[in-house]
Amino acid sequence: MNLRLFSFIVASCFNIFLVIQSIVFIIFFSGYRNVIKYSSLSLIYILLIGIFNFITNIIGIYISFEKNLSFFYILKTTTAIFSLIFLVYLMRNMLVSLKDQTFVETDGYKEKTNTYLINFTILSLVFIVANFLYALFLTNNENVYRILSLVFLFFLAFVVIIEIIEYRKILSKEKGKISEINLMRYRTIFIAGIIAIILGGVDILFIVIRRIDLIILFGSMFAYGTIILSVGLSLNFIYEYMDILVRSSEINKKLSELNSKMMDDIRTAQSLQISLLPIDKQKIIQNYIDMEISYMPMQSVGGDYYDFYQLDNKRLLFFLGDASGHGIYAAMIWAILKVEIEELIEEKKFTDLGNSFFILNQRLTRVLENTYSYATLFSVLLDLEAQKLTYISAGHIDQIYYDYSEKKIQFLRNKNPIIGTFKNATFTTDTVSFNNGDVLIMYSDGIVEGINPEGEQLGRKRLMEIVEKTNLSRSAAEILGEILIHLEEFFEGTLQKDDRTLMVIKI
Image 1 (cartoon, rainbow, N blue to C red):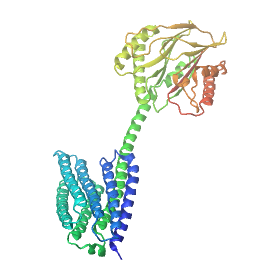
Image 2 (image 1 turned 180 degrees about the horizontal axis):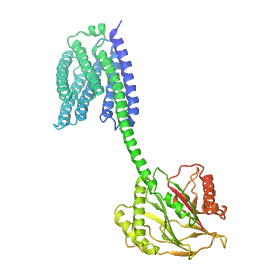
Image 3 (image 1 turned 90 degrees about the vertical axis):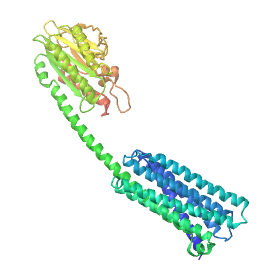
Image 4 (image 1 turned 90 degrees about the horizontal axis):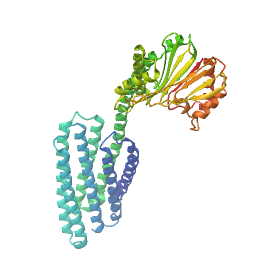
């Protein structure tokens, strides 16, 4: 039985399997480039090693059918040298990776390695060129080929010694600083690589001493080397995959811990915001006027602001606004806005809405300056004795007012700048005389910008249609409930992108 032919056939199968593994793993690895820094380049080297070893063994199968030295021996040596080049590149990339993982790369190791690889590549290419010059001009002189083979044999021995020394030196310095999985991966690649080079050298030695019959009898040592190398590199994929899983698990664990901490912070912020909501004050205000509110933050905390105050026995003050952004950031602006408003109320600055908004804007602008943050705010001052409703809108959307005596629904329009951007902006108010039965519907832009499953926004027109078919002669709570039912019929449970606040005041 011709074991040389058999060894090349078996090696070819191992090589093609390695190539397939490399391609599959490169595709798989594409989503994990940030997990293991150097593996992408290593995978390319492994793929090239598999390809050139496969080509070399296919040529070996061909030349197994004849015994005479020919051009195909030269070609086989050439492709084997290319495989050697990428094997050394792989092992050196492995050492660079090992050094980099320990965070002590301060000795210029990468630059030294690059210089070594350049010199190694040049010498390897010299042997390739020499082989082809022999194939073109000296094919009748087998002694020249044997001399070249002998010189290359010494070159391989030199490479093996250098790589073993370098590997032991780096490992002794960095041992204990890398994971066991990576250590096993490096050892497997290194040992398989060194064995493959040595067996390839034995194959060359048989040719130098003119004992091709040993290759035929025992099989190609080079083929056996590529089998061992393919097995080692295949094991590398297992270690690589395990390393990805471990690192991904560590990252997920850290993300889980971070997410847990973030959720704790959000719950704390939510508790704080709930404590700032005017829930208790609402009951006091409801002793003077019929009103109800619905507040639906998009996240655990929201940026929609609402509040109400009793200035005295005759006057009630209502606010509804929207801070820029969402979540905790918007809630912070929400809290700042509340603090500033309450300070102005304590200073009795809200007797004149226009002037109070001027002062409020100046104070908020100082806080939000250079943050590109702002707030829109709609405010209503109800004078129950004079039956006057004074309102102001600082960049907020138009609100809805129902005149019971005229059975007319209209938007309350008032154009003023937003709060927190233009420091010296001035603000004007408008006034409406009200009668019993009038209804004021205040809402945030999350209502009109809400979408249904088809992605259509509610819009002002549909909101007005909802209000028109709502029984506005009922109590504030009933009006609010009916409007919410119509809104949910439109939204159909679609997850919304903004907070939604709706306040109904029945005069």
